[in-house]
Image (cartoon, rainbow, N blue to C red; front, top):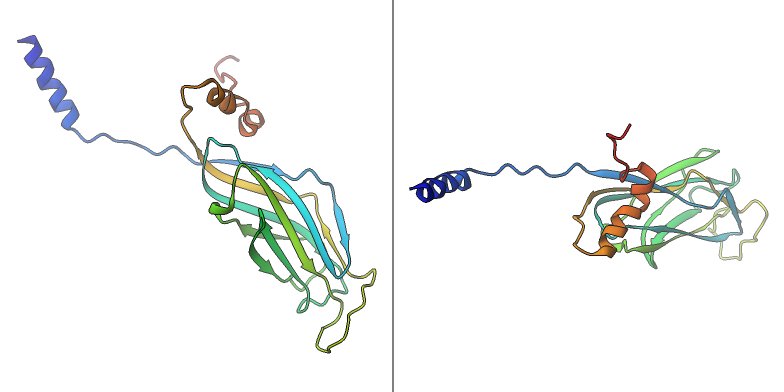
Length: 188
């Protein structure tokens, strides 16, 4: 009889819809290690590197590009292109203003791997190339990358596997260390 009651209770319990809530998205911002860098010439290129943790289920990645372009640059002729791991995905022209400005760029998730190389290429021209002649490189052709440039990750944590390497990755991950998530919050 007790077995029948247990089976009956289990059947009723299992027939009820189970409410599962998705975990909240986490965020982590990775600053680039370079300080302010100025690139000179009519054609410029810079590489920046960032890492995505294996236990992140990415929802969104944003590249916040803090830059300044020469005040003499022609905004209609100058352009900047961003590529990730050798694949170009975003091009833009500087806004018609001077000083540092930030371009918020959504990075395609399918281009992001564990270790990533973000490349900034562009041409900084101080006159329109409307004539068929060679434009001269001058000291006025420059692009400065500010130290506020970063990559922001929005993600959910994947469950740790039953392996030592998975535990270690979760325990020592850059987000865990930055936010001290491994610390017991009740031990104060």
